[in-house]
Length: 308
View 1 (cartoon, one colour):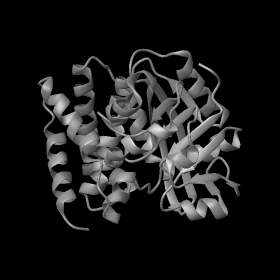
View 2: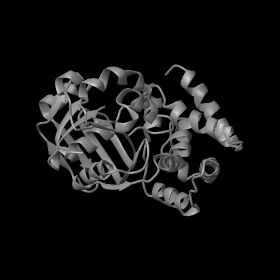
View 3: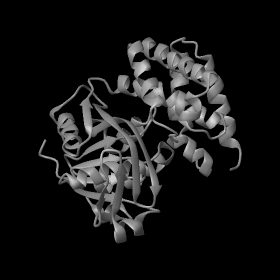
View 4: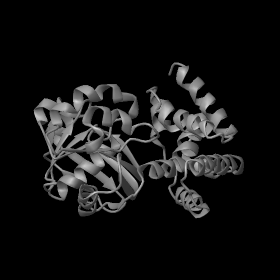
């Protein structure tokens, strides 16, 4: 593929602001498709507050419609999966023959809606192991930069997969290319299932609240091992050391508020099916018992039905 220079960020929340700003600062021609923050981005740009250094981009390209941006080399989707019904309108104006689409959504079954619009041959998926929040309009906060794992939706890594990862590295983000996007998604669920879920199920608490309660930490370990077992049934062995690493990283995060907890508190729709429903169904399809995941899914389903 030809070199990547123009990038469209679809979804200007925490991830979109943070990664888009870093890519722009690294020299990419970045355009942000924005809704609620549109006026702020146009008048004040983007500010990043991060443990590895704060910076501000006083002038950025921000658009209300994909038509304003037009075709680009790389589209990065950072919308919540609850907005995937909008992809059929958003993506086509951003595509040309060799455009690559990188989907950074959480959960299982989230790449298929992107591939249905953009085509499986141009779709990549990415997993962001990061602590980032949108702390104000046009402001992204990051307390743990972490890393990004990128893989092809269809087939193994290509030159373009590495080219996309190289842009993240150039932007100061640790990035890895995975031989299996499906395995990478199971690995991310090891953290997302317990921590995003329990912070909501326990009434809108932080990861610190979870980790300082022995009973809650025990629930974390049990849920992680159910995800580990489900992944193994699909042919992906997640070592115990990975689980330990996820827990120990969380211990030092402080009072972090996962995105699902913030959505719950704000009364926004939860990414219920990709993070809990689909993994549960895939576990059951392989005959794997996941009783704690089933209970958590039911609790979150009931929570999602209640008015804010």
